[in-house]
Length: 52
Image 1 (spheres, rainbow, N blue to C red):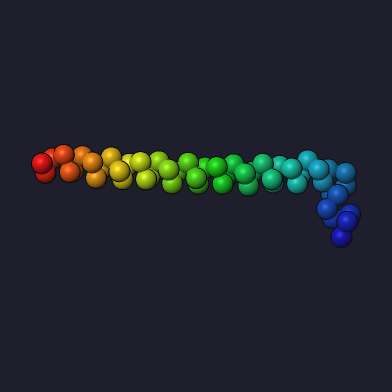
Image 2: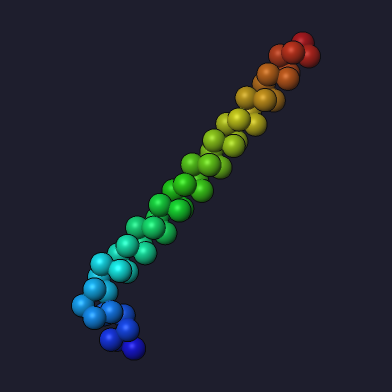
């Protein structure tokens, strides 16, 4: 099992690459949610201004 994690000496590179990828995906999801929320707020504000 340890040999599998080491991956022939390239384990650190492989696992750190997976870690960076996972972090990038999390950051992207958070950024997209913030952008979506901001867009929704903008739409609500715009429609409220038009009704007044």
